[in-house]
Image (cartoon, rainbow, N blue to C red):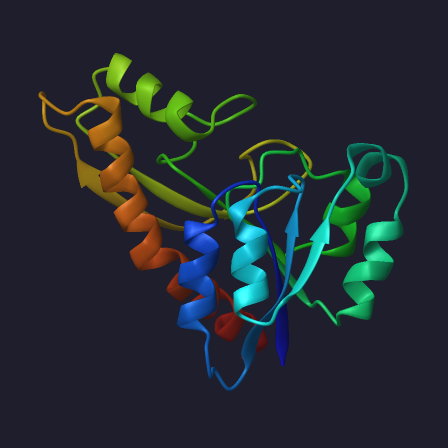
Length: 191
């Protein structure tokens, strides 16, 4: 059984899709929502689905490895970053090597790195005059957005698209493909 911890900083729309996708799954079960924001709507989502919740404080996240004990207590075998905005510290990357994925709202390696999240990405894509964009699911390593790419999906950008239009298109791709990409990775990893 794969037990997922989903790390998110905001509303948790991807977390919601993941939870719904794996409802009743025989081998994959979301168990814990972890956030760095005590008022994040994603925590209410966890409560409504009967999942554990954990709010991180920056000092303990970076200054100790206590989080590993929490993850172990929840029997977490796989970590999903779904709109989690902090850089993951080396101890956590090491503990979940090849067992932690992130979603990025662009086609990496383009438009990745520190500060490239949310609307920052979509504005940069528009400013660069790109004709397509998309989403990337990748393994997590010690650097922002540099882990091995597992899956990408793309969509065209119309000349008239605003950054907000681009954001809507990319979010639709994320909602459609993120959970199946996680499932595919875990099933291929265990076979």
